[in-house]
Picture: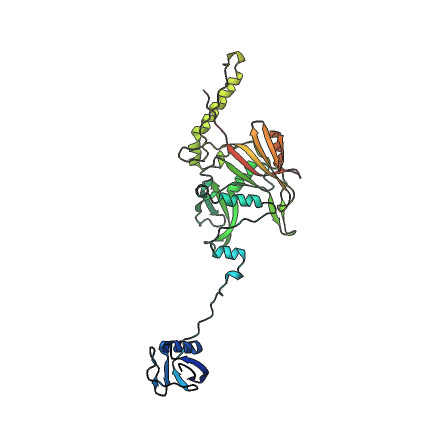
Length: 381
């Protein structure tokens, strides 16, 4: 009879009716005892009448049902409860599951943006597009200094930063875009002062060291009203130009690099004016030639601006009083004296004068984002 039922005494504890099978090696029985007591098999010493139990053979030990075995040995300390409880896949939210499995991020559906979201995710699968976006250089502030106004002994700190756009902050002083841009590049900041060991007022001054060929300007028209707990809109009229020159916002080094191209613009404009003043009989008559243009970026920096001159190319407007409601419309330049208004599926032709009316001051469409493109330098023969 190879299977017996025995009792095991371990210190003050006793385990009754423990199954023992002599057709299996003694280590299997010791594993059973480990499950009951927590004593590792190598630490166990199991004794009975006739001898001590070995690991690999039963020997001449005589067993019978109901006999009592004596076990000696100390158990390992119980493992401590983990500080962070394990979380199982079944209990995770979609966001936690995506993070744990290193899934790419999703895009929130803003009510009717599922098609756009799906299109963006498809384009994300193009590695060349992702590499191009990662390497994209837009707007560089390399010369940015911060000076504490409350401590003359504290040296100013200098740093660099890259941005995707310029921002036009709107306050009581700002009536024109240029004023808002200058205020953005010189602003007051409150932060901790290491010399005063407290918060102090700093003036942050910045200059642009690289201009992109296409410049995006955001009109900062929304602010949070704590009393009403809403994002309110600044309706103030802020004029913006059809032609923008940001030369004064640049570093001296960048200004110097742009001088040669900017002087060519002056030469071309003077030559065009001279041609307009000539009698018609002196002008050469012939088939119109294809207009050619000079490069608008530096040869060593593709996608930059080598002049600081820009033409307004598109406007994104918002109509409404809150950032969480209202309607957005696109206004895009088609040719010199013609613009197109894209109001969802409704498309109409508008004039440059209509574009200038988007500067604010009421409940009409108000410019929220301005897209300026490079002013092209014509090659005159």
